[in-house]
Length: 309
Image 1 (cartoon, rainbow, N blue to C red):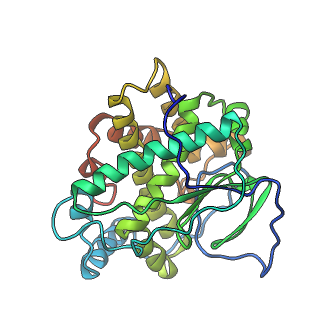
Image 2 (image 1 turned 60 degrees about the vertical axis):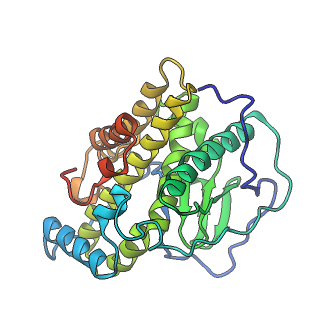
């Protein structure tokens, strides 16, 4: 990826070198993250089926004034104003390191700002840019206390992305997914969750999951995660249009999507898969939905709620 010498985002909060204290115990507030492996517990079943849940979610969104089809198509009545309040998050503070990895992350974040800023502007809206927090080992967020083992995650409660850059080393070493565009995909995926938060998908899902069984919540989480992958693909589409991609970059992202699929992680960590416990999607699903966004660049092609996944 040709990223050197391009604009770097100022929405970086560098918490490395500081200590985060656990002040109120572990929080169960929802985080949306890239999985980093570990043992997966078999989820409980029961309740109504996944297809019925999808229908309920669709009509629940409609009853709240949120039309998933309108959201994804970019048309209709204000699809970009139904989620989180569109206010700029507080400015980052502290000193940001100027190492190459930090420069790379800041450049990728800036590119996502340009792409999503343009999409929102085309719909008469302003894109509220997220802050990306860099941390080491552990961090305290508005979604609770997290360690580096959690992997990168997005917290909808403070509209921040959290990243321990050592995950990039783990991505290459443990997941066999090296390359700068693989790393960019990770950042773009979490930004995809931020977009979901703005347009109302995450708030509604987090509300509805309280009454779902674990199996039902997992099934819906897969659709949320695959949409974030597709949104990351949309970013990749416009990045390619700028001429910033090099030979092999797309394959790096697709390989990363493959390596962090639920089935691939479970086979690697426990030797067998438990499909009902999947909450991010299989390798094939993650690769397919990233590629959909990459090929078309259209929000309407990222409708994971009304299409088979």
